[in-house]
Length: 149
Image (cartoon, rainbow, N blue to C red; front, side, top):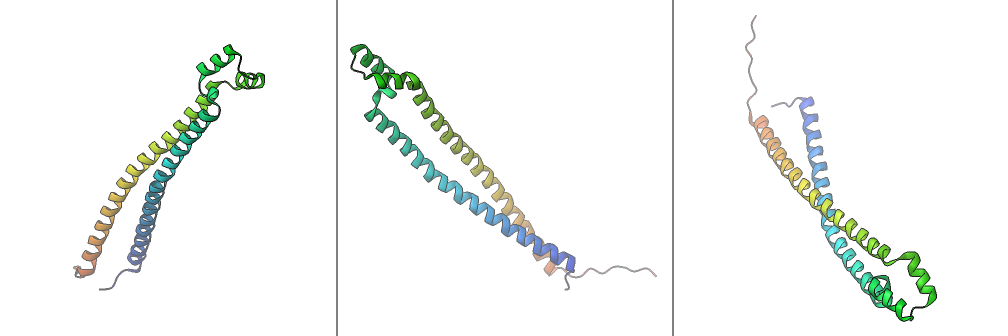
């Protein structure tokens, strides 16, 4: 059976498109899995930074300790000025901002993982449909037409 050249080009384009989709799906799934590792690393680094800051300068994170030190008079003047300018709320706000960013990225990756799984299932259905059509066209007999004179 001879295959129409236009159908053959469509066949090649469909095969290339299917390959491109498969590469895209695998790349995005690999990036999502990589984010899980990077995200956990960011959580650990953020926790370590908070712990280090609390160990080195607990007054930056604990306003009650700051006020107690000021009332006792054990606080150096330059640190009072520094903390008055910065305030502990800025540190907590920065930490909350980092937590929010990490959480948003996790949410985006979760949503994209769901979308990729849906896309992958549609891709598999498309491939199955394409392969079934391919087997039908290769095994089908050429059609005969009635020609009227």
